[in-house]
Image 1 (cartoon, rainbow, N blue to C red):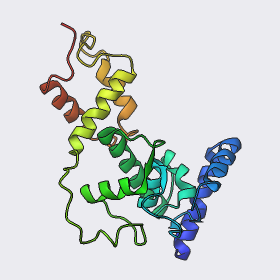
Image 2 (image 1 turned 90 degrees about the vertical axis):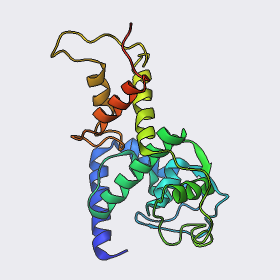
Image 3 (image 1 turned 120 degrees about the vertical axis):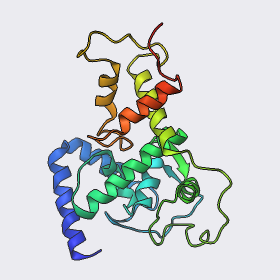
Image 4 (image 1 turned 180 degrees about the vertical axis):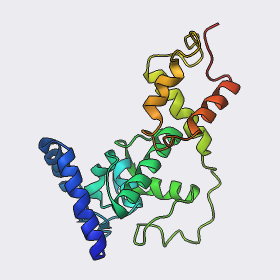
Length: 222
């Protein structure tokens, strides 16, 4: 880790310390400290002791795939950071969202590290040097299983948000008078700029809603 990265990591840590209650920080650090093979600085994971058969949470595996040490994986819950730390966290959050909505693997579900390597290959994700299994699989034949398109992951995320809000996607309330808020506005607030699959101030969410309507996966009550 360079001096600049160390300074950025320290600055990032001070941001988190100010942002989170002390008891939450203590709990996260205790949980992380007890994890197997959880050593290393924030952006310098300790790869010793890690192997493809080791089981960990999706959050930990994805953090490692972005060059974040396993014991610091908890920071990916938050959209904060500076420099290389911010870049790594944003990448991790997007990967977690893709695995959750595209493959049904939420951040706290446990998986063997091999699962992450398999999907990284299918999705053309870059992995840091030293990541278990990368060198051994460099020349391996591409998997026959095709990755879920990003659009399908976005569609699944919207349908999940609609159901979580208590609506039936195929029997949504009818639109009220022009200018009044509708279900779409409620769901936009939940995902746009929150879920990495939907950048804020972009048309990605609107296009996904149009796709779902065209496929008749969302509709208003008859």
